[in-house]
Image (cartoon, rainbow, N blue to C red; front, side, top):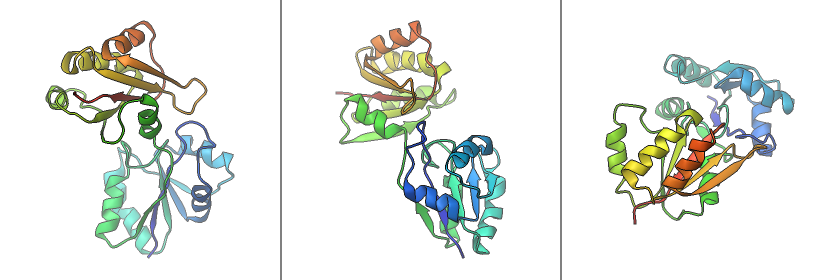
Length: 223
């Protein structure tokens, strides 16, 4: 029986990958990739020729059992996502849980995760924090925001660029216009930026300047 390696990949800058990650990706029999076209660029850059198989949120429920059988038969497998650490707002939980239930060893390598630099860059307290990932799109959103309005720890959210202004507006509404907010965009990439201020001032900034790229929002807790 082999083991499942969970391998973080760069969130932007291709240099942000460990020597061990490259070694594992070269040595395993199979790489499970969220988008084989995206991951193909990374593998080509590091001259990794390992066979890839698609494994994403739309097919993971169907492919888990087959992957478990491959692992049991001795196939070594690495799981990667398009960027960052698998299972953090990306596929990975279902497979790692299935491996544990079947007595298959899971080895998660340390590496890039977008919310860590965003949290540290924010200047907000980071001794205690919660990671919320993406807020519910419709059902449950108001309920979640009302609950989080009383949260005293620093909060971390992921958001898409076309929903950022709407989400910042909700923060003003539910958390208050003076709540401290930090928005990190395009981390590790050429046009990386972090905008800090009150929920109101950050909302005004992105209302006047449409955001692009991957976004992490860090919000101060209730005082």
